[in-house]
Image: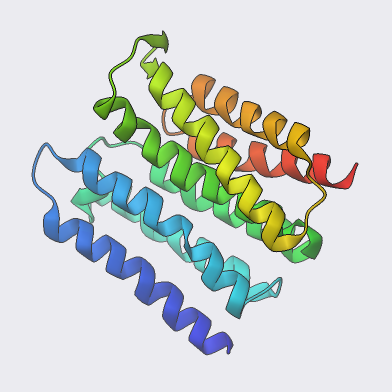
Amino acid sequence: MIIKGYIFTYLYIFLIIGFSTLIYKDGKGNITRKIIHIGVAFYYFIAYKYFGSSIHVIIPPITFIIINYLSYKKELVKSMEEEKSPGTIYYAISVFILALISYFKPDFYPYFGIGLMVMGLGDGLAPIFAGLIKSKKIYKDKTLTGSLTVFVVSLIVVIVFNILFGLDLHIGKIIIISGCSLILELFGKKGLDNLTLPIGVALVSWILGVI
């Protein structure tokens, strides 16, 4: 079971990176980075099925902190390094922190998933929709469309996890979590929001889930 988890984890993530590398073209790194950003978040479901809250859940994030750091320094994977941002490193660190909390507090596991999926889908889809549906900027380079995308995606993610895991999150709490997601993404520093958004959303969700 554990061996399968490692095989599926690394095969899945390297397939995403490989695909993004195949379609990468100079000046088009934004698209390939978003493919990786969104796709990697679904690692959570492999981890949940095969690792649970065992020590193994923290091993893949550790390896990708190292891999992403080397890629950032040496530009090993051009499809995710065109902007030369440490955001990919922060992404792996956030997964590691959430996984580590879940290892010590297994009841945190659903909230780990909420934080990761909000970052992967919300932050990943926001610039895509912002490019498709033009709207005014509301803070620095953040647009109304992008912020609303994060809010709506957060609503959907929290509702799905609320149903899947039987969490005690009524509609008021769900709206609060989604509002926090919007604020964290809106005011988050580029790249660093890969750290603040998932951890912030996960912690807010967990607090609201236990009170």
